[in-house]
Length: 92
Image 1 (tube, rainbow, N blue to C red):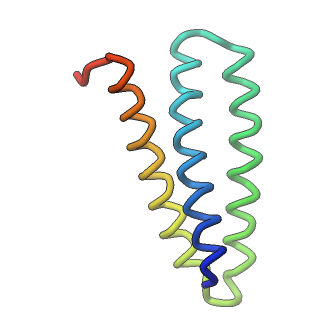
Image 2: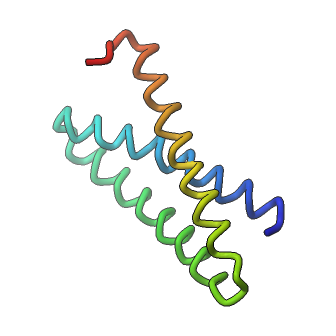
């Protein structure tokens, strides 16, 4: 897998998880329009990334793409929760 593809999947996973966490917070705050618009864009990105991974199945490169994407999602969730921590909210 090319280094550019690794960074693309990792970066997409980080951004997707970060903004998914923001989207969940918007839903919890009943900000319907903002949450809906953000969900639309999140799903567009998600579908494009998954389509890119799926098209590589024949090349035998899909497993690495899936793992890197999952690592990015995990890292993005961690980063988003760190921002929550910085805002003064405490873990429960």
